[in-house]
Length: 195
Image (cartoon, rainbow, N blue to C red; front, side):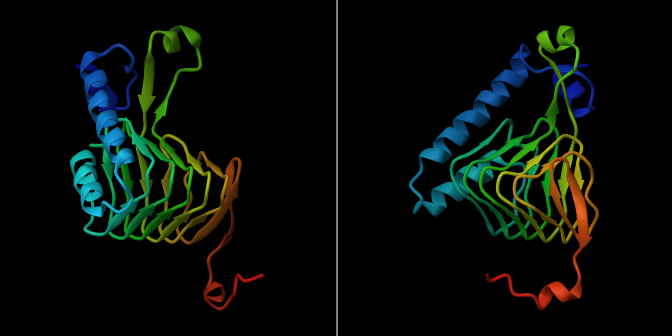
């Protein structure tokens, strides 16, 4: 079994010394580098590079530079996707975003993790677990989503949260560790958030 096959099977795999994975990461980093150097007004160039980098996209999407990922081909974004500055997606496993997902600045989606014991970690071993984000999700600034997490549909994740467990549909969740504080209700449609 290759290291890439182990990575896709959620097994421990060699991320640091496997030449195939290193080559694929270099390719993705080169595309990210090129993307991040484009002028903000070059929307066609941005679309072209993201279509080349990402596994799949909807027809309407925006990722504001700078943006970084590990492989790119493991990322799937739905329709009307928006990610603000400094989004990082460590996509050693699949990262799937539904439709109408809005991501604040400086957020991370981290499928990669490492053994707690230093012997295996020092040999370059890691694991990767899928991340899934549903439809109609708003993720506030500075949120970090950890390996294996599923965020349901119609969810708001408060800024600065560290999401280590699944978040159910129709929830507002905040904190470190992130936890559900309440359901989203019809009353929320009537509230004004002006101060």
